[in-house]
Image (cartoon, rainbow, N blue to C red):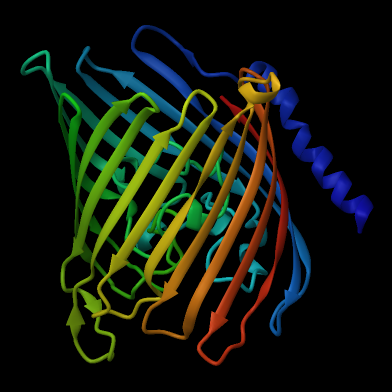
Length: 381
């Protein structure tokens, strides 16, 4: 078993060779190519489980991106995802995923639309009104988490935390990879984001939710997300403070299973630098329970420690914890803790050693508990 694990890790490390020649570049002044190539190998060691065994699994996502600048203010963009493997998703007994990346099953028949591999494709226009006003509109196949629930220290499953409870909020709807419109307006320290989407088929564990397997059942629904951001710079450093309100149309199944209902949620997401080498983040969210929901509330937070402290300025350590309060289904609560060390080997390659603790508790007191040990290798294309 150990030899097989070591062999798989060596395969992941072979991405280093690819990174030597696969770096983002501008083909010409209008056309650009970029993206991410990643590999991760995770092993779960369960201390309590009635329905699963210890296991090791891996996945290799390739996410190429293409951009075409129509004018200085107009851009066409598309992102694809080609993935080998589902990681621990098919054998894990836990409700939330230990790696929030879109994996093999997530990139096929996206949102029940019959579309494979094409994740986003949009047209974006930046409007010039006044030098101090920022206005941007994006229309097409979009990802709401690119505009909502962002966070400086806990928002990227390729460079930061891996567990989905520390990437975005798995207790609220953050639809992705479907048709919609996003408008961003900014002036001074304020930014306002509004996202409208029409999302296709959604079921428990559906792939249309960015960073979430906790999804209410709906065949098709409309979605509106609003966020207000405020940036404040103090002697401690820069801080970002976000307040969000999210709501769907009444196309979800009611909690009692008898009628249609809508889902709504309120979410806070903060990050604050604490000097040159330390940062902190906090997320708090709560959603309505009219629909069948796995989690009603989430509380998460943690620290980011810069490698400045030990002479490696591009490295960092992340420490995070999450508590998810159960909704009106079988789970009473879930707990997540994660620690990682990310080592940047050169401009286009980073390796992350990752350790997670996870526990789900059902209302009868049962539920799995265990640790996940992982290694992630990421190269920017």
